[in-house]
Image 1 (cartoon, helix red, strand yellow):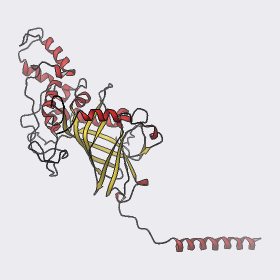
Image 2 (cartoon, one colour; image 1 turned 30 degrees about the horizontal axis):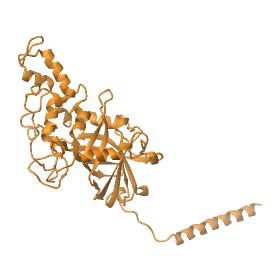
Image 3 (cartoon, helix red, strand yellow; image 1 turned 60 degrees about the horizontal axis):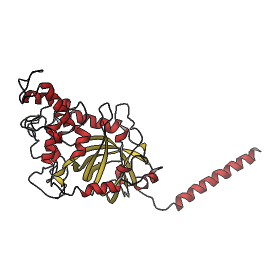
Image 4 (cartoon, one colour; image 1 turned 135 degrees about the horizontal axis):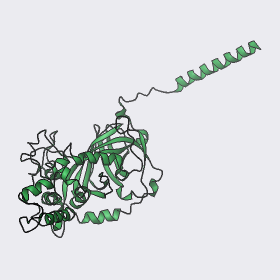
Length: 390
């Protein structure tokens, strides 16, 4: 019996060695993978990301002297002091109004600046100046109002920077910059996904489709408070149809750029209560530095002035901390708007802008994507027809 087991073990040992040798001999030439994970194609030539950071791109120097030589803009309290330095509660202020009546008028103007009394914000608005700004060349021209990017690209269009660059709350450490990141990470309404398909690799790909979706799942944070990559995001197939957009682009040396398209970006204010508004960005395009774990860069285009104001300026209780008044900001947006003139009035309805964005990699689940409808396409088309650029 012992000899039988010994012969059986020897047989199986010889057989497995023979199979291993056969596999080596018949396996063909050795395949060498390209160095670096960004040089290899993602699975199924697809790469997904989820937005983790969102802030309007404001170029700034440490002391603000370059872009804001006259200082920062005044908030509502300083506006009142500047306009009515001797006003006292219960007394008649200049113009025949009591201070209480002035407060009521200003409160109404926060929500309807188009109808506001022109005397409510008499202090001059301080535009950002200087030759440098973040952004992209949106019109293919180098105009007298254009900037140069920090890395030397000329023809940068970002008039929104002029409007908000000297508002404390929109600067890098300001209230809005902080809440923009918090909203992107914490609020489900703002869950933005992008999916890249048709990729050769993350270094160079000539033809890439970029699709925007709204996601359903939370962003998971690690122990240090940073968003985790490589989680799964489901697509909001029921209520996210109007946020589905497809752009064509390419990847060159690890940088994704896209052709322009109209985007509707979901936006809910992170201010302790629900204010849902959507940002309309016309002729929007992306410029993102890609890695297997994340992406960062810019979304640039022409922000619809009214939707920008709805989503940003009407947020309650933020004018004091951000350092502006709604009526003054609205007038600056109208004055500096540089795109999509209204066909009836000729007044520009959109302002060139750039948004700093960050993403982490995510696996995008397509279980219900077939049910995502595009009923909003007609609305996009009709609205775009009334915003024809020069």
